[in-house]
Length: 109
Image (cartoon, rainbow, N blue to C red; front, side):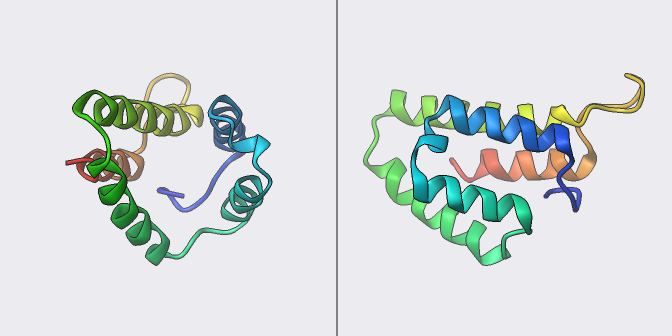
């Protein structure tokens, strides 16, 4: 939603990531994901996620924290790259998506 919409390629990338991480197999998680893909979540949800992340990160050791950050940021980057640029000429990641990725990385600090 960083650039205001989710196209089919981004949606497919999100579903692949959900499958890779087992989210698609959990009924309630899958329902939430479908809802978030259907309409943009409220900004308060991202704030709640950041708050929850801080608590989860406290329970992990340094290696686990680094792995979680890498996994989530890499998955988000793959979604951002899914829409591609224009004929391979422009960046595959829009400025809006780059800003969200940077914000995501900062959430782990």
